[in-house]
Each structure stands twice: as C-alpha cells, then as structure tokens.
Length: 307
Image (tube, rainbow, N blue to C red; front, side, top):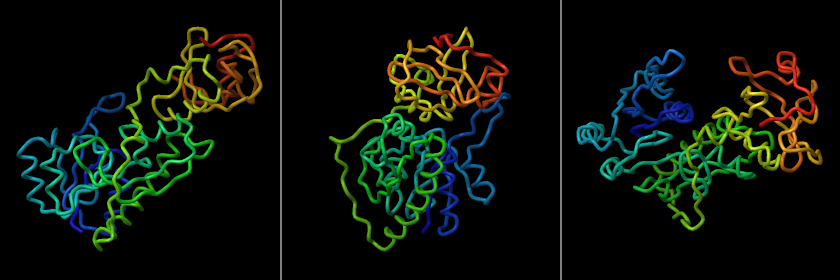
C-alpha cells in the first residue's frame, strides 16, 4: 500500500521500520528538529533519522492546519496515513485526504488511557495488562473507532522503559496485521465506550517527588512508572537523590521517610504503610548505582530521614 507515515519518537520508529519491509512509504511526517543534550544542538527525531537512512522524503511542518502543508500531503496520493506518537493535531481536512483515512497506533487498550502518557499511567494505576489499539482517527483525542486490539501483560517488575519496548514491537506487528485486513476489506470498526474512558495526562516532573506518607506499594509503582522519565526523587540532608529501582517491603514499620536499614542489599525507608527498599540510586552529577556502591560514596545510617 502507498502510505504516509507520521511519527516522532522511538516508539514510532519501530512501526516505520516494520512498514518499510512490506509497504511503499511515499513520505514521512515528523516534528521539526529540536534542541537536545547538554549542548542543546538541533537533533532529528528517531523517525527522521530512520527515514533519512532509507532515502525517504521527510516533511516537518510546524502545523498541519497550514493549507500549503495540506496540499503537499494531498499531492502524495497515499492510500492511508499511519500515525504513531506524532505530536501534532490532524485537522479534518488531513484526516480525509487518504483513501482509507488515518490509522493510529495507540499504546493502550482503548478507551482506557486516552492521551499522551498511556504507558506510565497504566503502571502507576496498578493495571495488570495494557496493549495496543489500532484506531481509525477522528477529530477527537483518541476517540475514533477501534479496528484491532492486542493485549500485553504488565509484569511486576516492568518499568515504563521495558513496557514501552514490548509495546513498540507489539504495535509494529499489530499495524502490519491491520493493514493486511484493511486491504482485504476484513476490518470491522468498533465504537469506543466513552463512559469507560480514562485520561493519561502528560507526565510532570513535580509528580516524581516522593511523598513518603503514601503507601509503599504506590511509591514502588511510581518508581517504575517514572523510569526513565521524570525519575522519582527525594531529599536526604539537603541532597536530591534519584531513585531508579525499589522493592516493596511489607510489614516494615517506622516514621514516614525514616531510614530503617542501609546495607549492601539496599536502603530501606518507612512509608505511610510498609516500607520501600531502594536498590538503584543516583546522586547529583553522578551515575545511577546499586545501593552497595552508592553507600560507599554517600554513607547513610538508620534513623536518618528523607524529607
């Protein structure tokens, strides 16, 4: 099929890579290059980098509401547009351009977790499963008819990073399956139940500051959900420490934020209920380290308190 692909981050690049093996990509839409890294150098998105490697035409409009951008897309005469974490709103005029409209790869089992951050929100909520939904796009926010859904379990040790990678692979495979069915006229659109919808709001750095008065189970979920961004953190003796990995310690008791133990196995901190054993930590300017190495550089004793 003649396809326009629209996407920006690595999640989308996985889908584009799969499409390149079976379909004709007539053009790639991606966000304009952004400053990145310590030097704030203009950096191409993962999707653009892959497109350039394969010699594909790349379009980077700041908005798709621009008439000229719409004319450029129309001239491509694509059968379908595939959208994955693109980051720009598609106006009605664009949605109607391809013969089969625009298909979106969404990283949740819609209608649960519509919005920008479905992967970490699912972990944070304690969901046991998530998945991929291939959706026919409309003008709403992830409200279009569902064309195909595939389930992915959320493991007890999943972080947003590990779950992202599994869903990226599942999304690529699900997309190819959906396109085969679309071409053969065997896709049946299913309306979403709007009453069952939940919203996956964009992650804020402020959410990652640990409140030790919460139950340890909820904080442990947050540590996994906010890895690799924005990363949970807490202050000890005025030093902000990032926490990359932690484990639930049921039955342990103490004042919220109190260090109960600190040894090679981890740093155990009391929470509102139960405790959390911090396994991988990071000091300002340093690298993430297992607790045993971290304690050699920054000794912590039982009785000290995280604020």
